[in-house]
Length: 306
View 1: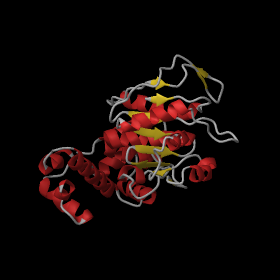
View 2: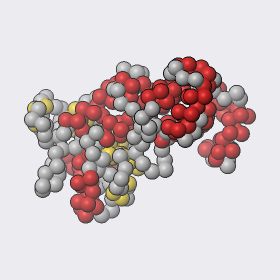
View 3: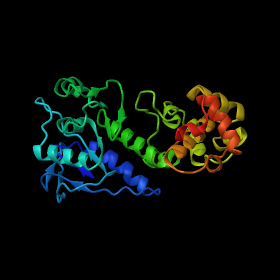
View 4: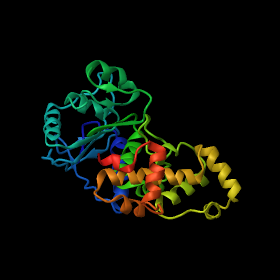
């Protein structure tokens, strides 16, 4: 559900929406609906958006996207009817993603209380003052805290949406969406809880990006250095040097980190056995998965279900 406010910034709205639409063309099932307090809204850039639906009832797990309106000297005004609806939606179990100044709407509804959040740099101090219980973060592109996600300035809404696609559908779909939109997944949100896929994308080496995408899209297959190098017309030594310089790790280590992260996701979110997870993520057997997981985390994979 996309909530459209008066003076909405078009990129705040269109960027994340196009990410979800592109994901739908690659197997996702996001249902894009648009609602507002009024059936017509003028965007900040002068484009009128019409025939918007009324604010509907939502269900547990539904995602409410709140693009940000234009910043004015007086700050951001939020319609009381929208505030009431956001509170009701939260009580119903909805999830929320606010882009840029859209975080103010969540703040007015009390949904940022006790949560890490961020917003446009011009709103950071006003947000801290108006919502003292919110943990407003500086220097990050986006945050996730329970059912509430927020992003910084305008274009970071794309990064936020890509991170949600990654959460819902994994690195392969995310890489395909980023490639379709001609953007690189090189802007992690900040903080320690980054996926190994996103945290290793902060570089501009196109050959290395191409190899990372290929590995992510074929996570359960073995990857020889020579084969990866041939894909990007480099020698194995040349790829190894370029990959390490760009990411700080080798292609093998990157592959292993992705497989372990996916295994952790599957063990946490499904009832698959360790053997089934090992097969799905390309490990030789459950014993190899258990050994590598213990080496990295100091505990067996079964600890995820303790």
